[in-house]
Image (tube, rainbow, N blue to C red; front, top):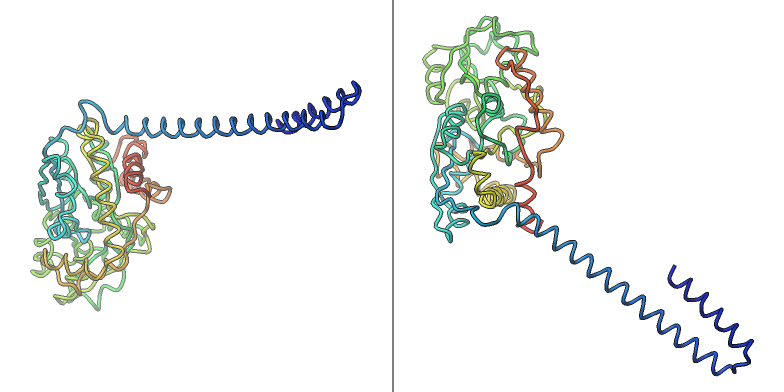
Amino acid sequence: MKKRIGNLIIAGIFGILTITGCGAQDVAKATTALAAQGNAEEVASEDVSKEETVVEETAAEDVVNSEFEGEGLNEAKLIRIGYQPTSSYHIQGLDVDHQWFEKEFSEEGIEIEWIPFNYGPPIIEALTAGELEFTYGIGDTPTINGVVNGAPVVAVATGPIDTKSYGIVVSGELRDEVKSLADLKGRTIALKAGSATENRVLRALAQEGVTRDDLEIVNISATNDLLAALLNHEVDAIGTTEPNITAFTIREDLFSLDISQYALEAPGSLTLVNSDFAEKNPGLVARFVKTEVEVQNYVLSNPEEVKEVIAANTSYEVVELTSVDRWKFPRLFDEVTEEALLQTIDSLKESGDLTTELDVKSIYTNKYLEEAYRLLGE
C-alpha cells in the first residue's frame, strides 16, 4: 500500500514539474529523492515490525518464566518420590544407574528420596499427608478416587502406552476349563482393592457378561502375596500388570487371559504431584517433568539397555521385560488419554464406587509438560 501511494505521489509531482516547465534533469532528481525517501520509510517500518515481534516474544517468555520462577518460589530442598517396585515402568530402577533426577537438582542441594509402595491407594494417602512430593506409574483409579475425596494431587505426565499392560493370570490346573474371560464366572479371583488393575479386570469381565456378583473377589495388596495365593490354590486367578504377567507365566505353571481388546491406546499410568508443593515450587515441578521426558526418550532409544538395567536393579529377568518393546509415550494429555479417564470414571460410577460428579480436566494439567518441552528446546 505504501509503495502504491509513493508511486502516485511521484507521478503527481512529475506532472507538476512538467507543467511548470522544469527540465528532465530536475524531474529525475525529484523522482530519485522521493524513491529514496520511500525506501527509507519501508526499511524503518520493517525494523519497527521486527522490534515489535521481538518485544512480543520476549514478553511471552517473561510471562512463562514468571509463572515458574520468582521470589519465594522453588525453595524446596527435598523431593520424595513414591514408586511401585513391581511396575515395569521402573524409573527408579533406571535412575539407580543414571542418577538423572539427582543430577538435575544437585546444584541447589535438593535431596532425592525414593520410597516404595505395594500399590496405588497408599501412595495417594502419602501424597495427601504431605509425605511425598511425586509419584509415577500410578493408575488412574486411585488417582480419580483421590481427587474425588479431596486429595491435593494433579497428574503432570503419563507413563507408557501399552494396551497389554493389564491382564489376568490363571492357575495352570484350569487350562482345560478356562478358555475365555466368561469361563471365570463362579471362580475366585484376587485383586488389589481400589487399584487400576481391579478396575481394568472387572471392566473387561463385565464386557463378557461376568459381573462382580458372579465372582468371589479376594483383596490382596502385595504382588508377591497375589502370586503365593495362586500357587497355593487359594484363588483361581489374579489380576496383575506387566511385567508380572510375563514373569509369572514363564516361571510357573500358569497362563494368562488377554484383556487388551477392551483397552484404549492410552497411557496405563500417571505421574502425580502434590498440588501444594506444585504451587510453591512450579519451576521444580517443570524440571522434574523435563527429567522424566528425558528418561522416556532414553527408553525409546535404548530398549535393550533399559531391560538390562531394570533387570539388574529388580527381581525381573531380561526375558520377562518384553513389554518395554511395546512402549510409546504421548507428548501431552490428549483426547484419547482423556477418553480413557472418562471410561474409568464411568465404570466407577456403574459399580457404585464413585457417587460424586467429577470434571475430568481437574485430574490433569499440560502446563508442566509444555514448560518441560520449552526447557528442552523441543
